Image (cartoon, rainbow, N blue to C red):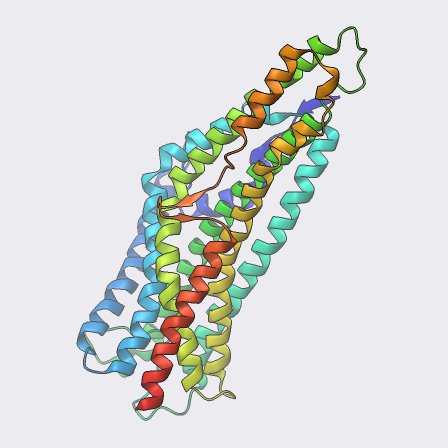
Length: 386
């Protein structure tokens, strides 16, 4: 027995957090002043952090160690802001995407299909929770490390290398609080954008798996007298669902692909530089554990996109096999042609792209890690020679 299931409930947590920040588009805004004020406030904090670090890079351009340190944090802030701005630009597309998820082909499902969707989404939520926890650890270490670092002879350190038009040591606690607060805001918004993307990709995977199961079971349990009529009706529903899923992927790609592209490009540099800095610091220092957590956080961020992108590709690739394992041989020639059309259409798997350049699958993850290691090996060789 089929019933209506609200798919937006699977990413309600991410939607709620982004709404608090004034970024998730709403058809009706109840508290407009608070909604838009939160958005402007987060933009001001985030952009002022990037501007401060870029200015510091220019001031310290002759100091290679400081420059490398600053560029690492710049390459972390830039993709976050690109994702934030891109999400803001694509607000209308997000509304279209959510409206598309309310189509009957998606929401009119059986109790068994609902259970399968909730189970798959629960697995994705566990991974995003691990990612959030890792980000909390990184932010905590960002805040703690400057307070307990006793090795600096230049006064107290700050969480981030930033330029200020005054003597930082005279206003250390105020500056420290400003930087830590900005890091918390950036990490909070960034993890919610990543989590929303992953949850939507996983939701698409659920729809492909549901379609695969329907195709395998199409026409089963019906009498031979009415088989063709029933099978053709079920096939038409499957075709509508397949077309709706491909349109959903197009909307998701429009919404998130540009931000993911910048994330991948900057991720190569950040992973490389973080690994290099881990090599030159004391293994027993808290800075090493700070860099180690940051290193795994960057890999986990890219891994989530590539892993679920790979799952999406594999789930869409199983459509043709599902048609083959159905009872197509019991149908008329006309109905068999419908199966053949679906199989031909599904020969091209559905793959999400990042900025029309990178496919979201595990091969891209390996390419990023290989590129990062290549640059790391060059830096290591230069460092060893010196």
